[in-house]
Length: 337
Image 1 (cartoon, rainbow, N blue to C red):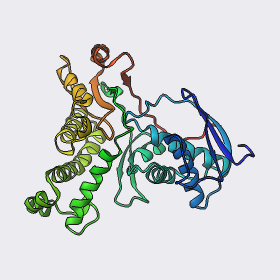
Image 2 (image 1 turned 45 degrees about the horizontal axis):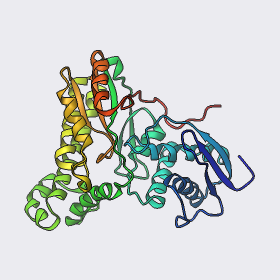
Image 3 (image 1 turned 90 degrees about the vertical axis):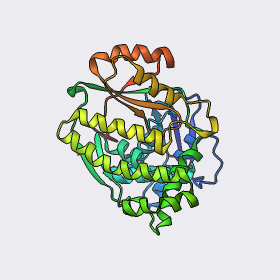
Image 4 (image 1 turned 120 degrees about the vertical axis):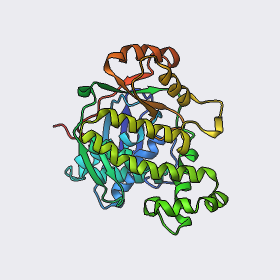
């Protein structure tokens, strides 16, 4: 903590100091970069919720890939929230509220209509199944599972794309799904009956377009798949789980349509990475777009014995730093004393 009513953050690898005055927390205040906006946003949301804030200096190190779909924004939001909770609120802010504060900061101060999933996963830690029927009190089920112990490695492949100018693409997905729900007088697709949706598809395509219908169809199928995925892991049916992951990825590709942006149709690195993975001679597992998509990373589950060969194979196409094996943290945002 400092006594200067200013937050100063140095992040390893970034040349400049991020600095926010506690007297300038309005979202319309000028920010020169998204990180400064997020810092201002998290502090401001804490204050608006009646919590204590204060100035502090922080030094951050991270190996989260920036702008690649690996929740770098959610990571910094949750980390900042944990720092403020610890320094000024007796570490009393729980994981769910940390996540909600991060989401609100990103929605309001960056103008990105993100959901709550990334923030909650970062704050909570481990493998979790989340039901967002009540966004202020999501139902969280922790899953105790190790892919490595069952013969598989989870990897992400950084294809070199960046998410920075893709806000419109991300925003269109929930907007089109909500438009379908509103056609039926509902707020969310989860409130619709599948048979009612199918009955009205001809009218939906006329009024909202084909893509909105395809994305809604992805939602209905994906919502059902999650239940099966949780059950497969709980019952240690890894092959069935991976088969469902693959079907989910295929649906994202065909129906959700988030593997490349229509702004730059010639740039399709995610599509290329998926294709090259499926062409890998010893490929046994699952491959899909990772995160919000459109650019960034793919997610691969691969047999442990072929990881070295696959890593060398993909580095040839996407560079020496492109392949990252992942280990899922058992804990999320924690204080170490």
